[in-house]
Length: 573
Image 1: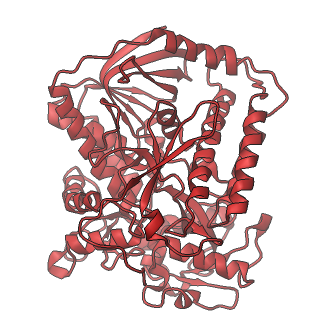
Image 2: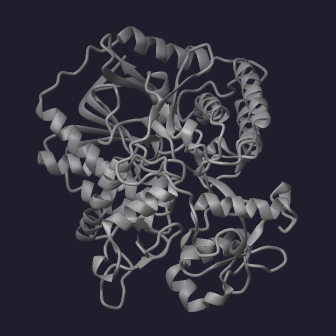
Image 3: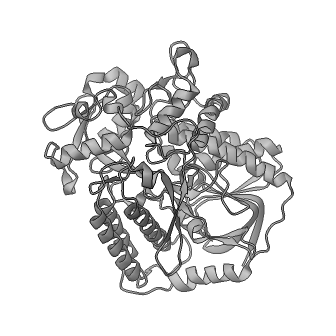
């Protein structure tokens, strides 16, 4: 097997991966040898889909402060966020915004020339720095344009990484890679690995995620022995376009949009009288589902009953300037002009608050593995993420992990002894195992059934009996998955093989999510149970840790929440 060597390998080319690559180049003067691996073309990473803004405290003279941003984030997290992590985050973000400005990002501007910020849910001050409603796209473009000023990185586009290999001492040794354009299978070795592979939201059928976002980094780290922290906390964004699930940015409500039920009522007055449509996402999503379940929604296709997002009162000028992408999407996908008609929306799977367990520096328990962005869990978001803290998280910990990996390389670490036997076993598993499978089951059908059951058993509202049934169904799907068939036997651009490997990852992650969710007998943030309706700080003010158990059920453990400034109180909005 061919072995390729770099100083650092970055798995994923979204905001956190590109930000880390830029930081490594800056800190080493472009002398570190970086391999950048992506399942897609480098600028097709899901981060380009981020729309509404990026959070930062930029206006102390107008009333914002670090403490206020931290409090909003901790309260929004339902007090499960680690408060030292939040403090570091809020202090770092203004500099990240200024860096992007310096590198050429075309921020929307106020009349005085300063970066425009709009209100976002759960924030008590308008701190979402915005580039119209295409913020993620412009951030990605700016980071890539900055990275290409250096010539010390190599791209591996459209490559599916199948495993993270460790040596006999438990250190990272390399990645095994299926290169779709060539059909080759090889290993990439490095002194350090950054996992920056994004979320796992295509576990669900109704989702905002690109179909390539299948939790591959989560699953490989999990199998390599790193715990998944707080996987039960999956965020449902309040405004997914019906029936596609395309994100209608929180910026729609930040600009003054209303949520209305079938009676025409702005129903959020019943649930969050002060913040209304700009309450945190967990509260708004539960409120919407309550309206729908109690019969005050509109009948939708395929069981996707909905409520309406009304922008008509904002006027054409404001919509065209501040929300041009939203208007374009509505017109292209529904033939609906939001200047004239309300938009059909409902809660939609959107973001993983949990992820690969790492510390405040993004460092895992494996000496030379870091993680950043949505795949990681340093517990910034706790049980519920505030809008516009996600792109901010990716930028902050992309920079932090890039800085820390650069420092690690200064210690002149050696590349681990490469476990050739493990690598050869992995190649055989993929090409002699998966590729030669000729069973009656379809990985596409199994994946579709998995996503349907997650919508049903792990949605906005959950119960113990329903989650037990979901776990039983996942067990059945895992047994059926052993009997799949791969129709395409070729090695070049075998999307059939891609889908089978993704399905395997999603099955493991679904089991981990529901295992942690079933054990958490309370309602907190994005985890709302009808059989345990209140938050229980005595038993569950702690982080879930799920460990992989080959051939058996996942192993569950816990660790404490870091509370430095604010003790938990009742959330009122």
